[in-house]
Image 1 (spheres, rainbow, N blue to C red):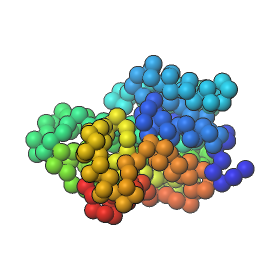
Image 2: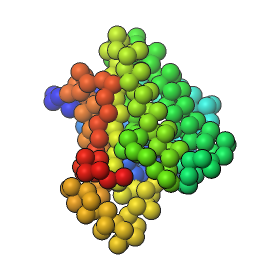
Image 3: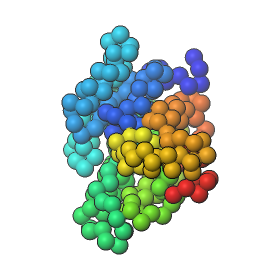
Image 4: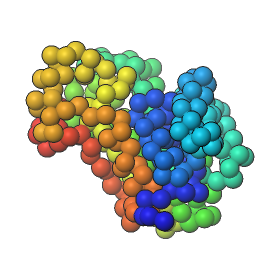
Length: 259
């Protein structure tokens, strides 16, 4: 057994049918966890779970349970069905997020701002509230929230999204204080520019991508797999004394002043 071994753990990962969430699920499964693949579309979840299971000769390391961030009943079903099937949840990874608005913050309407806050912050609170009681009983567990380096920066295009991601950082700090006496760790990961569909506008244009890479100290846009390793660390015994922290994984962009 190694410090990074996740054998016997059950991890619920939102937004995990593709991109960063899928990379997290795939690596956690590789380190021994049973992973719950969840996103809005059942077909996409089924396909992602099948891809992971195929690597283990059909052994069920991944299970698909679709759920929408904006639907409280579906989130409750996600947690309840996971418990019904496996009896426990050791790790919650809140990766899913949405951004329905691009433009100046002062021009956003109430409905779209509310949707951003509901999906990117409130859903994380709701899911955490659902998994914490049984974690308290076992006096163990980890909650990992995928934020963004946008939480540390201003923007004239995604200001509302950045506000929601900054709120997630305070959520992590607050839950870490509230749950520490139960040995539950709560941490955030802040990805920079990563090649996912969500951030396609940053990298699909070759000249724009080349310009971006010049301003990143490591000289490249990240891959979803670059984020996954930190979640294994935080969910495993290797990360058991880290809580309330924010890990930036951005190729050095933030220290270089890249916004």
